Image 1 (cartoon, rainbow, N blue to C red):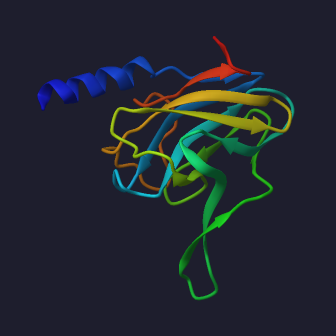
Image 2: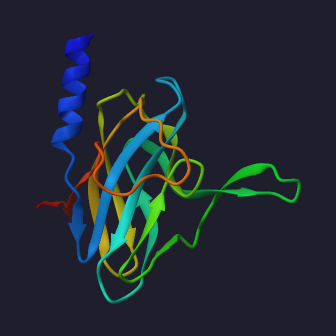
Length: 168
């Protein structure tokens, strides 16, 4: 058990580098599901835009699921939280950032093709309006306890990025 935990921690540390392409930096990425048999999962990260121009995350794809959507949580008129697809995507302001965090905006994997086991890696392509396609490898971290207001930068589980399939 200790050997498995050390191996998982080592794998997560290996991928603890920020993803960067065309002024977009993806930090602190991780994925999770509620169980190995779950039919859905999610990915979380902080996306920074280091350019002088606003950009927008407009879609995401991954071979881990039959469908990948951008989602958020919003309260309905009765105060109950609902998860909704955000078809227009997420604005990433110039010289700003946008956190995709548990309890808020996130990338949703629907119809998982396989279970998400702790320490696995998930390939996800993020499509931005201006920066284009950014492919990242996201570690599965089933132990992480982030809540709303995820901390930016520096944590284990940051994804590594490849622009248009090319390695950095």
